[in-house]
Amino acid sequence: MIKRSLAAFILLIFIFSCKKEAPKTSAGKIEKDTASKAETKEDLFKPIDTACSSKNKTEDYIAAFQWYQQKAEKEITQNSPEQNDKLYEDYIRIREKYTACLSESLNKILEEYVNYYDSESNSYKFPENIKKLIAELKKADLEFTEVGEGYTEIHSVPDHYFFVFKDKVTPDYNTYIGQLAKESEGLYSADAGLVISWKELGERTVFWENFIKKYPKSSLISRVKEIYNNYLYDYLFGMENTPTYEFLNGTIYDENRKEFNRIIKKYPNSAVAKKAKELISLLDAKVPEEEVVRKINIRRKY
Image (cartoon, rainbow, N blue to C red; front, top):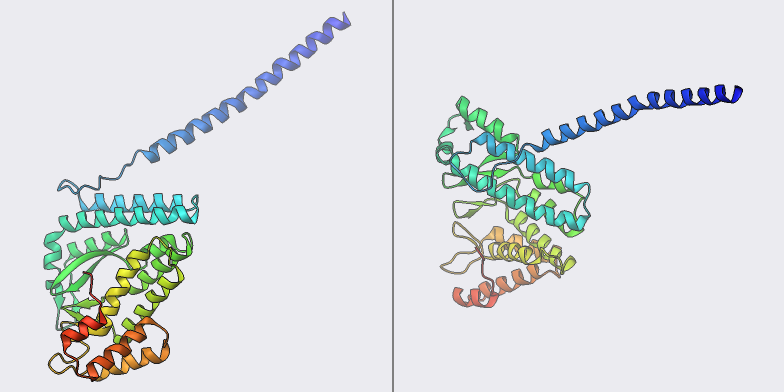
């Protein structure tokens, strides 16, 4: 009798335990299902295709920009620096494609943008629709940028890429992206003339020369060599409306001679300094311009 009662008691405890655990399993399943539904809902948004279409509105492009930035920032935390180098290349291509599409759709506004400038107040006076558009672009780190000769383009703000990828990529990429952010803070040239100072141009040229020396095996090297080559050409010869010497008699302008001497003194072992020395010698010797260009042997890559 005692054995039979004990068995019944154990059975009751077992049944009670099972019932007590059941709600936990059910709650866990509900929680998991809820999370799954939330993730599914979040994944429902898909950005518009990078192929330009007249059907796409400005807000569609802005949403796509934001979606890709959030996606990139999430992936960055899980990637190695080398993987983030590739991610940067993919990310910049996508943003540039969307920017091109957005520029195409806002072409009329870009053509009229310069007309909003008020010379009397030396400032822009925008109508409400343009103010709203500027605020909309800002959400995706985009802005209107005047590039000279009455043209306006849409660009990413200067530090956008560095903000997203800073210290998350390999050292060469980190240096590259950081320098481009600095150099994008203002116009380099406009109306066939240099906008930055000769000193700034000299420093930039030396910077990229040092980059080439420090990271000779970087996958960025061909790109950097082109930047360096173009800077060096502009530094030595100038541009159509800002030349470094008088074409008629080969006389170096005082400000350029002063700058050449500064760079020679500050970076005596650099290729920039050596080319500057060579140019001074050739022009002071009144060597014909065609011969000067041939001996310096630098061509600008457009």
